[in-house]
Image: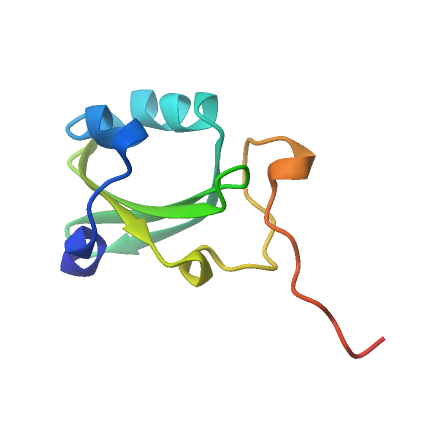
Length: 102
């Protein structure tokens, strides 16, 4: 989980460090982020969130039900082409990559 801490958190999310996971998720949704992926890892969970308006991906590590780290991640880490699991307006959702097979 150390990889998620490699980049500083976006300024609009710094206040969420240490937040309870449920409250943090509600705040991420309210701030325009959509949940893209969650992975269970040893000692906690790693979730990736996408903000379509900012075209920004963030990685959040959760340990014992609290946000431990919030870090900016490369846009590809949010899996362009995958639909978010919850939240966000349709226009803010991750756009699929160009499909040249059609």
